[in-house]
Amino acid sequence: MMYRALIIFAVLTLSASSLAQSPVRDAKYPAHWWAPVSKEGAPSWEILPQEAGPGEVILSKRHELGLLSNFAATPFTFRGKRYASLEGFWQMMLYPEGPDDPRAKFPGIEWKHTRDAVAQMTAFVAKDAGTLAEANMAKMKIDWVTFEGKRIEYRPSKPGGHYDLIARATEQKVRQNPEVMKVLLSTGDLILKPDHHQEPDAPAAWRYFEILTKIRAGLKR
Image (cartoon, one colour):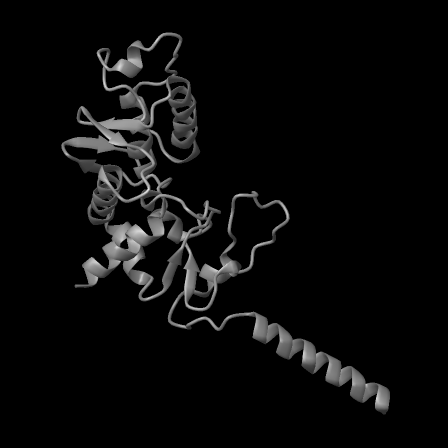
């Protein structure tokens, strides 16, 4: 009898502990936003849906919240030009604007893509194109990108021209894609969190979840 009582006590204690460790999720939001995903086989960069804290949601690419990712194929027009994704818009700024651009004429530098081609890329294809461009930037020892012929500091300590462009382009992506707007508004008052690990002091333009939070507040108003 004593042994049975101990077993029951252990089960109840374990259940209570599990409940304490799992944040309570608001039932008005889709439960699959937090559905546990096995860490086995998951990429090292990923923050899994179940890792969200109380009142938070991870903008996971594993379901519809992935539409809010810079990687998503959510075409939009900005300042008269069409872009296939926000990632394509971001990374194309690292590329020469034309043959007279000093980056295009720098000795020993090879550009495997054109600026226009990168603008039509999405997801990891665009990200990889940006990685190649960053390697060229390092060789040239430059810390700037360009937009419409203007040089812009790429990783400023405080939000500047690059951040402003990314924020405005993100808003256009949301406003020009009804499904993206619908998904963003469906997050209600949840705290938006990234689905990948970022450096602690990442520049403001990299914190896309904060940019989206501001856009969401504006849409509500």
